[in-house]
Image 1 (cartoon, one colour):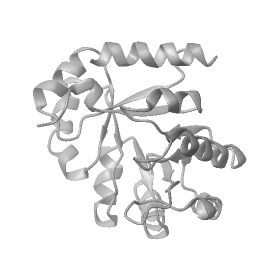
Image 2 (cartoon, helix red, strand yellow; image 1 turned 90 degrees about the horizontal axis):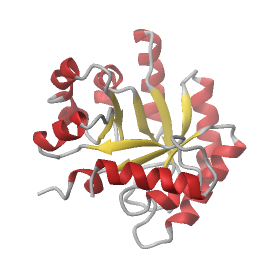
Image 3 (cartoon, one colour; image 1 turned 60 degrees about the vertical axis):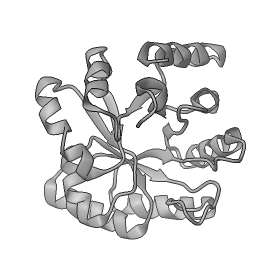
Length: 215
């Protein structure tokens, strides 16, 4: 596998389900990958990358962006409020807005800085206690609260439980987004991105299938 294969599979699934080819954006998840693998994927033309940790991203991407200035960087992992300012300067999107305290901090910083990345609310569709995200029954109210703070919420994100059928979780996320008028859905990873595309994903997050297994 590799970048070209994943892109081909994305386009094939879009065609199969009657969606416009290119309507799903590929986030190449570069967390913990060796630098040479990431550079190789950059040299193949990929420009949208995802990282899980602010600190890791800050240690490599500013330098790489000097060579590849059109890179778009998305934060996929949990965001601590004390890292929010750094994240807002480093990332063009944050997929993990998951609690009121973080929403409040982002809103305050957006007013102070005069800019804010595109934001996704993380929904814990499986109601897993160890996982971040708002539970589905609270998603509408949390979204309304974020919008009242003038936060640019573009869509929703989820990570289904590993032992459950992902299509059910993707369908639930799409339903919540639709009733709230949200256009973007960040869902689907290396093992299930085609299922996510069939359910309307606009961003799929693929790491190992592009770069190879870590370690």
